[in-house]
Image (cartoon, rainbow, N blue to C red; front, side, top):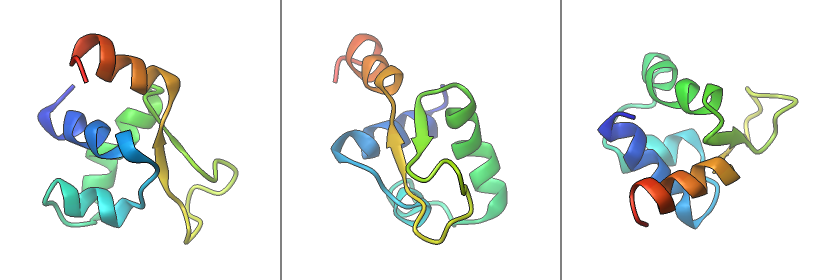
Length: 79
């Protein structure tokens, strides 16, 4: 995983966050290209998930760590 991806996982340790909050935390703009580059691969790999999976573009959408994401932080990164 990239440094930005790891930072996203660390941000989500304390609970679900919106895309805006995630990008604020990693100091990038909330642009669709950044979402495709940083958020979508984490979802596809199963380490984060939508909080409203039936509607990915919902205005209240947030992202949360999955069990796999928690395990990755603990086992691989020691968090």
